Image (tube, rainbow, N blue to C red; front, top):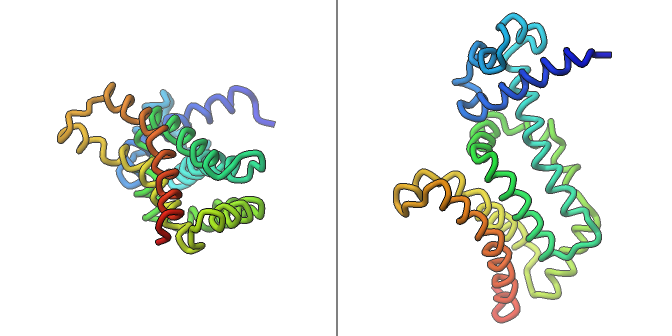
Length: 210
């Protein structure tokens, strides 16, 4: 059994590594910098985690797991409707990204560098397969005249509308003058805007099937 001191040191290293990796990415991050941020010497970091690659794998897996745990819990909840699930997912992710705005770019860069992280290591296919959700979406889509194959379009659009402002924050700041405090307000407004967009899209299928 690990001592509390050992666990504390490991958590301190992981917290520092998360900060450095998210800011700099895998390629630019240096273990010496991580050790400095953690307030320890490099030898101690290597003792606990052996290599930058091993430490990075732990950090990105934990970061992705946190995001997919949220997604999985929402879609598998039998008590909520499809519109409720959209609202809950948008709110949960916006709340997370307001606090950790560098996560989207970090994940996109690193998953593109190693796509098997998502597909194989995190077992994403297994995690998001939910008979309840598939059945619920099928009923919802049929009721509203949404073609089955349009599910991926609606999902991608919803996720993109949630994540893109964080990727485009520097552009929004320069072009539209949206500074830090204004940006937070902008993100909070999207908690209502994105679910409303979803409702409008659903209504458009009823009025004129695509």
